[in-house]
Figure 1 (tube, rainbow, N blue to C red):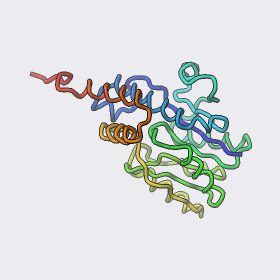
Figure 2: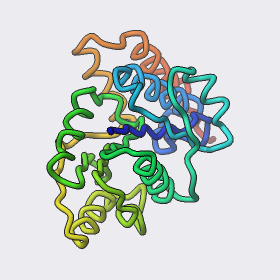
Figure 3: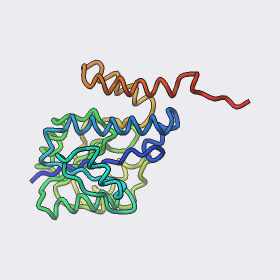
Figure 4: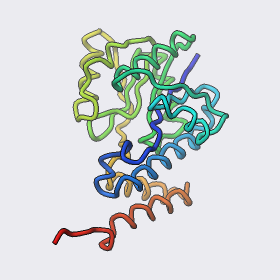
Length: 228
């Protein structure tokens, strides 16, 4: 049985996309986070029956259900750190009978259904697959067995996340398959890149207009207040 875990952070201003917020402000950054989550779920709608949305913080579960709809299965993320929350969710999926588990976030809304399919296919041959990002993290991790050690002691939100995870897997003698390099929509230049790519494909036009309007408003000269 396959299980796709999508980690969703409720888009409360000031608590999401803090790196992006430094450029566009908390409200615009939370709006973009919301759209990234919505675009991710829209794009991966064909995976709905095999997916669980893992929501953080746990006390936003009811609001997340109202936002994302009743068609998706939701559960709260459990644990103090991202590593603990990943280990718990992945372990729970295996305990429920999954034989292959793939976990992603909503910071890479460019992911296509076939990218997820590829990850699951790879897990028929190797125990671990990872999709690295350009900033040293990863946009996807897949396992064919529970390996909570892979999530322990990782310096999350640093450029060492991917390499540290690879090192841990090799220390356990686990083969790892690296997926194509990707990126997270975490900075202003990432937003511009994503919008340009999607416009070239002619997809999600309304959402892209909203993203561009938010960025333009918050980065225009009129919105910048200079100290005397």
